[in-house]
Length: 341
Ligand code: TA6
Image (cartoon, rainbow, N blue to C red; front, side, top):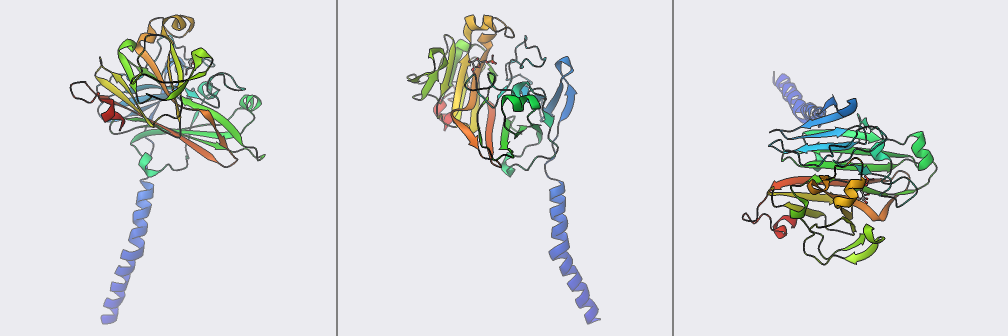
């Protein structure tokens, strides 16, 4: 009888110490984060992904360009600017939202302006390598871009560009890009990059950008001459096209009229571009309405001054997190010192 009891106790112990933990691990790994999104047809029947979070928060990403075109808050308000004249037809990039500039920002290099990633068809990545756990969220999708034959002719480098678009439980929108050099000829490659984000603002002349004061910038309107920002906040009264160098990882856009502040957090992206075409240039941009410049501002997390160089097998991560917080002078929340630290 005693032996039997001993056997039973041993079996129970075995169960507790080996099998149960194993089952737990399996259960946890099986419960690993599952992408939750809807595949839908968008404008011109282009495939798009819809991410939904609680309380009407949502985001939309077109497979064409891996392009986020919509980000809405808990009141269903659109936070990104999207041109009503954007034509949603390849090869023309979508005007507005968050175009991806890769492998080249602007015309600083051998390929076409802002590169080719924004006018390629991306795929849903069904087996992405895991991301660090602190990157997790409920609503997300993983996308992947690999070069086409045409791309390899234009830019002879083999790469994998993975991007996770995630909508967090506080409504924050996060884009995590991972670019890997998979050249088989041992060749390193270099690229520049930007998340060319178009923010929706109430009135450009009432908006201010904080976090870039005292920094050096290259002025694209003055042949990329280098200057130092003198103002303690950037405001807008004419065409602006500046590349701020080695900026802090946090920048704020204060929209007093909408009592809203956009907080931009970035990792792996040293620079920031600030662009508004203003009146005259807007008229020359076919897929932008003549008055649209009043309701948009581009503040772009970027890597431009020092291109990213990867040897075969190496991978770069560039992360953008956008949040929109209600703010007003009276609440003091519009005090950038509070927001940016
Ligand atoms: O990021 C600012 C900028 O480089 C401007 O010079 C302007 O050209 C803008 O991008 C839009 O470029 P796109 O090629 O989309 O018309």
